[in-house]
Length: 104
Image (tube, one colour):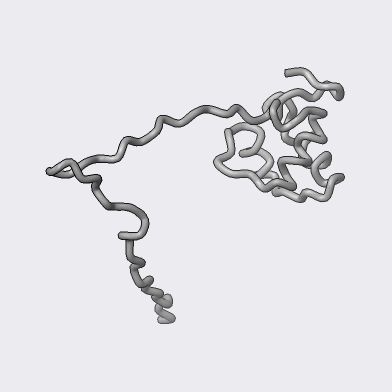
């Protein structure tokens, strides 16, 4: 993908150049965050960061995101042909245990 600014994909732009360009647009990330953003596919991304990346790279969202259809899950049936009723509603929270460090 080429862009009007000549930057291309985030992986094509050195991370030391991305950080100040994002900062100009009000997005402040640590060097580690920028490095991960440039070298890895993010699992989730803030919309402000995404918009700033599109602006920096001179491209649109469709140039940075590839939509892939996920396989549809088929509901399992129990004996007798009824649909199994398990889901999020069956889950119950577990109480967290907070332990303070020993001050010895």
